[in-house]
Length: 417
Image 1 (spheres, rainbow, N blue to C red):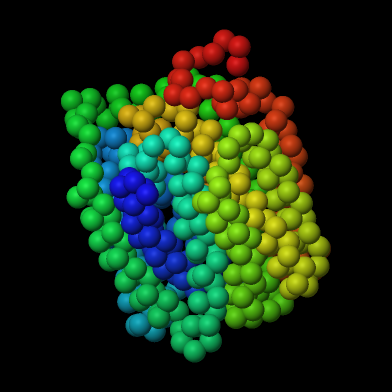
Image 2 (cartoon, rainbow, N blue to C red):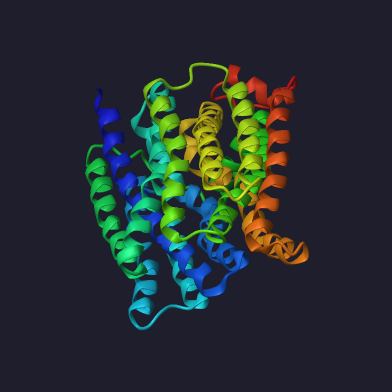
């Protein structure tokens, strides 16, 4: 194993721990808010507030990742994001936090977390060669899956014997370990000369050109925005669907069993990777994820939900791996920080739409059809699954996206694309 991959594994280990801690807080706050309000829309609002600042700041964060030391940005983002969680904890210890206070806390945490993602992705390119990208992407997906695989069952057990304050304390502690791992990795990397002579907007313009001049990359990003909308609806509504007929412990176990699908796929990709046919893998995995969403909403049966959820999560690493490779190999290394910031912003706009509307639609469907919020959430999930399947199958018909497998590092306009 070369030094570059060893550094990646250390960096990845820190993010894995951070992911588990963040998952504990996310699960705990979701259960807390639903118990207090009984509304899917309230849960969605907190998720939106935790997500929107990171999205809006992803573009300037990407520029900063190309202008300053990426490891310093990661350490700052990880360390300072604990402030928001600490604020919620203080409110909880003083008698409980209301929706407004929780919203403030998750927003503060999200603002600082915005510094992390572009710098983290660009750092992966800094320390690895192209042959290791696919395996690294599989491991990154595995770390991301920890918040669904490990966190729910841990949180469910802890909530049975303690309150949410314990989950918040554990999350805060994980930030310190992540910062230490990043600091160790930083010592082994010589930072590239910064481009401080270029203005912020000049750097932003270069990133925009890197993304838009390659028609295949831009088309893939636009498709990704639609994909995240329907996936976001599933992610935000699965919890109220289960909590409507079960308890938090069952929810935690169910989420963990579902996330095992992501574990299996991520381990496979971490060992083997994907060698070819990235567009085909992307298309099929998204179509199957859509089918899983439809099955998930059919019936209030925890066994059916777990099987369908397992299938859904098993498809995500294949889709993410393919998307990551197709974009990463078609953008020059020196532009990746600002490019990933823009890509994250554009591709994840769909999440904003999902978080803003899915909870409201589920509540309205539940009341309008007189079936309750749980079944209302199921209806929205099934409709989203149909749309996701259609989009997934249509990807193979987009010529500019198919051409990405045969071009690397080319940001010039291809007249034939």
